Length: 389
Image 1 (cartoon, rainbow, N blue to C red):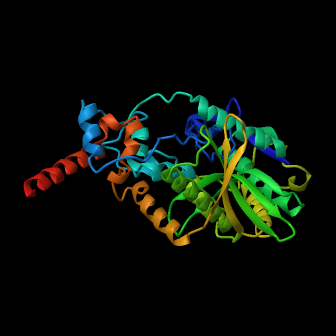
Image 2: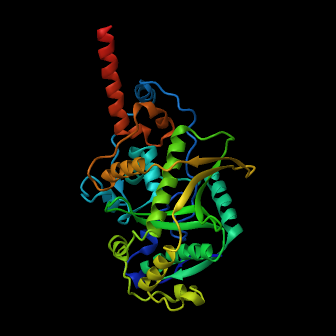
C-alpha cells in the first residue's frame, strides 16, 4: 500500500492567493492528516502524576505560587482577542477542528484556550519525538510514503481523500491492516466540521468486521491515569463515529465545500493527478475523486470494535490492550457541550476541584483566571465552615 504526503510547491502562495503554508501550519497532535504542513506529532499527552488533591488544592497552589501576578495581554497571532468577535472555531482554527482539539479540551478547556491566546514557545519534547518515531516505524511496516507536490487547497484535500481511498480499496482487495487513515465530517447535525487520523484499522474478511486500534506510547510501565483513559476513550469513539458516518453515506460533498472552502470542479494539480494510479486516471477534479471514494466507502462495514494499545517507549513492547465500549449517548452529550465553546456560545471552562491536580504542571497556572476563581470559592467555603464550627 501507499500513503501520500503533501509537499508544497514553491509558488503555492502565488497560485492560491494566500499563505497556505501558514494557513495549514497547525499540528493536530494524534490525528493530523499526513501532510507536511500538518506535522506528524503524535502522543502529546503529558504524564501528570498521581491524581491527588483536596478541596483546598486550588487555594494551596494559588497561595504557594502567587498566581495572581501581573495582567497578561491575550493575543492570537497578532489579533486582539478582546475585540475579535468571531467564534473560536474561526478565530483559532480555519473553520474546522481536529479530533485532538476536542481531546485537549477534555483535559482542560481553559488550558486549550490559553494555548491560542497567550504567546509562548513550544519546545520539542524528546518523549513526543520518540512516540512519533514509533508511529512512523509502524506506518512504514505496512505501506510506503510518497511525496506529492500540492499547489492549492484542493490538492491538499485530494491527498487526504487518496489516503482514505487507498485504505478502503486495500480492504476490498483483501488487505487486513491499514494505518494512518483520514476521517472527517460533522457530528449530530452540528455545524462544525471535524477531521482526524486513525492510527490503525484491522479488517477481518472472513467475518467482514473492522476493528479500530489507537496506539499510545508511555514512558512508565503503568496503566494511564483515569483522566488519560477518559481522553483516549473519547478519541477512539470520535474516530468510530466519523468513520461510520462516511461508510453510511452521511457526509456530502456540499458539506465539505461549505466548511473547507474548496472548489469541487477546479482541476487538480499535476502532482496529484500523476500519483492517482491507473484506476483513477480519469479523476481530474475533487468532485470526481470524492464520488469515487464515497462509492467505495459504502462497500465497507462500520467499526465493530474499539481498542487502545499501550506501548512502552524504551523497549517498544506492547504492555497491554484496553477495549473501549462505545457509548453513543455519552459521546453526543460531550460533543454538544464542547461545541458550545467553539461556536462562541459560552466562555472556556477549567477543571473541577476534583481534578485540580492537573494545574500542578500547567504552563498557564500563574495566569489562569478559572483557577483564581476556584481559589476564591474555596476561601469562601472555608470561611463559612469555620464560622459555623
